[in-house]
Amino acid sequence: MNREERTGQKMQELFHSPAAGEEGTDPEFMQILQRYIFGELCYTGRLDNRMRELVTITVLTVLNTLPQLKAHLGACLNVGCTPVELREAIYQCAPFIGFPKTLNAIGVLNEVLTAAGITLPLPKQGTVADGERYEKGLAIQKPVYGDEIKDRYTWLPKPFDEAVPRFLTEHCFGDFNTRTGLDGKTRELLTVIILAALGDAEVQVKSHVYGALKVGNTKEEVVCALVHASAYMGIPRLFNALNTCKELLAEG
Image 1 (spheres, rainbow, N blue to C red):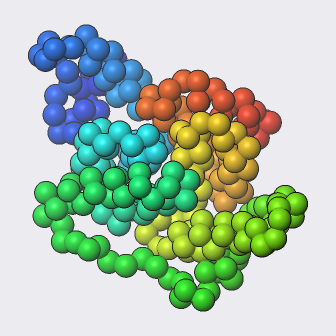
Image 2 (image 1 turned 135 degrees about the horizontal axis):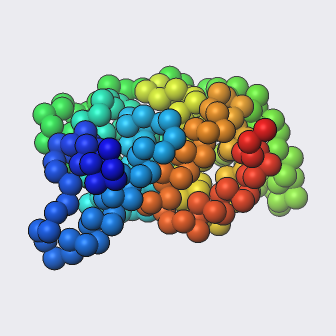
Image 3 (image 1 turned 120 degrees about the horizontal axis):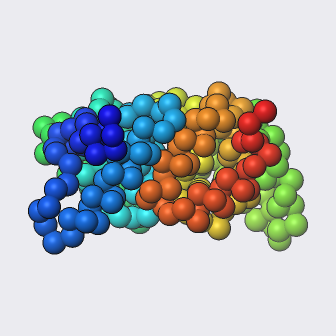
C-alpha cells in the first residue's frame, strides 16, 4: 500500500471514518496531518493500535488538548481498549501534571463512556488501604529505583527532607502504581511518555526509561512510543528525550 492507502485503512480502524479529502476549511493541512500520523507513524515500529492509542491519550491528557482527547478516547474503544484501561491511563497522569488538568481529562472520558452506553462509575481498581500507601508504594518503587529520591533530598529543611521523598512514594507509587487495570510494564511506558510530553523533565525521563526497560519494555518499544508521541508533543521534545537517553536506548 502507498501512504494514502495506509492512511485510509488506519482511519477506518481507529475512527471508523474515511481519510480527509477536499472538504472543510483546511483540507491540505488535514491531509498532511493524517498521512504523517496514520499513514507513516502508525506503520513504523511494532506497537499495536491499542498501545499506540494509550500513548496518544496520555500525551493529549498532558497537553490538556481536550477535543483531540475526546476523538482518541473513541478510537481507543474502537481498537479494544477497556474503559478501565482508559481511566487508569488518565488517572496516573495526576502526580505529573496536577489534579486540575487530570480532572479535565476525566470529564472528557466520562462524556465518551456515557455516550457509548457504559455505566459509571467504573469498577474500583484500588488495592491499598490508606495506612499501607507507603509500604506498598515502596515495594514497587525500591526494586526499580532504589533510594535515589530519598538520598537526593536530604538537604531539604525539616520536615521536608523526609516528607518530599515520602510523598513521592505514597502518592506516585502507593496511590497509583498499586492499582489494577494496567500492568506495571504499560504504566512505566506511559510514564515515560508523560514526562517526555511535559518537557524540561529530562532527568525524570532518563530515570523512567531505565525503569521501563527494567520492568520488561524493549528499547524498540520505548523508542516507538516516543516517536509516535512526537506527532502530538512535537519533535523537539522527542529529540530531548532521545538525546537524554541515548546510552540506554542505543542499539547494542
